[in-house]
Length: 283
Image (tube, rainbow, N blue to C red; front, side, top):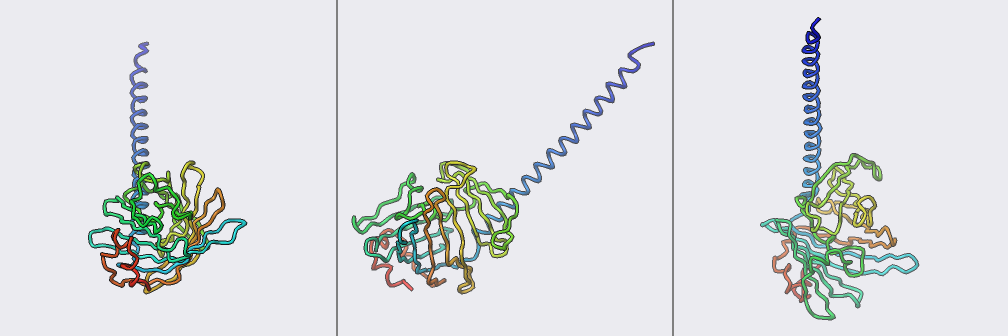
């Protein structure tokens, strides 16, 4: 009996089985890749929708900042902010402290460009000078608060890779949980951010910030209260919490006015240094 009579069909069947397995594996791999890409697209669309949530052509606010630390009375500050969306895609933001006396006049100007770049200038009345905030200081605490200079920028979704981590209930709201990781790690003080997004209002209800350990957040931002003002959802009470020290920066918006046609000249280093140039625009 010729033993090769049985070997050829056996090897042929084995080869066919391997080809079928390869094709099935390839199909499964392609399916997984397609699902992953589709999920990433959904995450990117959500991040973009949050970024583009209607917030007026400009807005002016009067707010109260409370610096809260265990064992100490809260330190309270008053401030005015102006924000303007420009036709070229830039966003300009000016913040000035109005009191108490030891910080009154201190201001910050931030220009967020359409390509994701950012310029910031800080004005210190004691020195009577405006100085640019260096890129390596974006992780520094702003005016002794738990807010970093980077937190006062308007970060573009294109600077991060986005991924949906699932859905989770937060204060009775079914939120989409969105992870954002910098495309360029040198572009952010944070290694990753995880946001809880209300898909109905496109408001972010919570953000966990990860600096050193990608598995353990170092800071947490919480939306405490919101209100519709002139048809725009407005965060009226929020907290930034340092999870290591327990220090809290609370920001309460007492007045918000939208679409006042703020002049472009309000958002330059000269206006930052000369309080008289913006005082007439306070609500």
